Length: 546
Image (cartoon, rainbow, N blue to C red):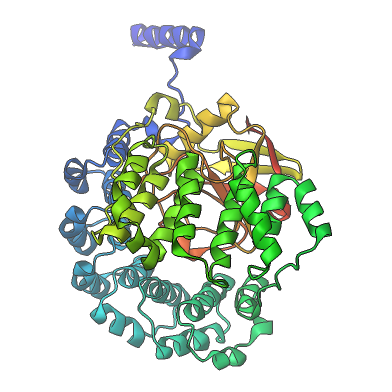
């Protein structure tokens, strides 16, 4: 016995002399090699290799594998996820499977979802199924949602999410609208009232012929402020265009490029002097492209008010293609894709447009590549097919493992500071790429180039106009339940798996972005600064803080 005690004492002494031998506490969840494997397969879009993990012994791994399909959105996973949603012993695993089915959004899963709902005992999972029935809507799930009634607040919110998902999938009716109005008048929670307000707002935006008199029956004063504001936007009228004058021209020419572009957007498109001003700016190669882009958009708008020969319109557009600037080329492509007369006129010039498209640098200019492809499809009558970006920017897992779960960054602007908390555990690829850019000083002295009231502020573009990126893209990360609440920070994209360096911050709840744009951080201080930002405000620096 004395020998045993002596051995223990010696071990204690040796351990105390070598504190480094004590295992380090993981600073995020990616100390687990199995999780790293699953997330890496997700990043590489290796769906077949993810499937075996849906049967993993550890529920956390099954959850991660199911949520991986929320990012890949590969229909290959539907039968496996459908079975998992109905029979997995873990409640979190069942919920993850349901959420992934909603992200895939295929109506072939509806029968499995309805069966899962019939046997599910967890209220949160039942609500998730209701939401997914709307995101995967067909006639059967639509009729089910219209007839569904429940007094439980969580299930009511899940139903409302399902109705909103159906609306985004262009499934709506007057009776559905009445159900939502009755619901918003029933004194629901603030989050439910806000989502209902978004439903009402979007319903009348997509169904412009609908009778808006029902809005008068809404108890507006009893709603949270954000809900009141959203419904009030339906009554906001467009501002009258600016009248042309020599003094206005002087102000425009002395303004910074962002202000100049904003003033151009407000010009009366039916004014000859305004048209002449925009035409001169657009043709002047020494003018900043932010201003030239605004001028081209206004020129296109003026064509609705004057007889402008088609050959001169095409000549105007050719300046954009010959400029070599991707923003102008994309804007010109929009015009071709939306104007059948111009598209028909350009039939003999498809090879020219194809040469412009093939001169672009990919994946950096993929958005313009796709815009020109849409223009060519409009000319030829062929089906548009977007460019498929090859995997080009793998996650640096060694770097990920150095990032604490509560990592914060400070955005210093000319209006004040904004503090973010990064979501490394939920979006490892996006956060690690963002922090590498932060550490390199990439974002210093960039600008907020886009501000949409009651929506977002957006910045980080290396060009300063929203068209800039670097020579890599990253994967979309939707393998979590994060939502766009006020102060959510997301990555701008031109479609799935095209994210890069630009980020945006929301002013308010933006439910139609949920599951469509990666969320990688949240504002925890400085939301008042976010609300004060205007176009042209500067990102002085972004840095990590403890």
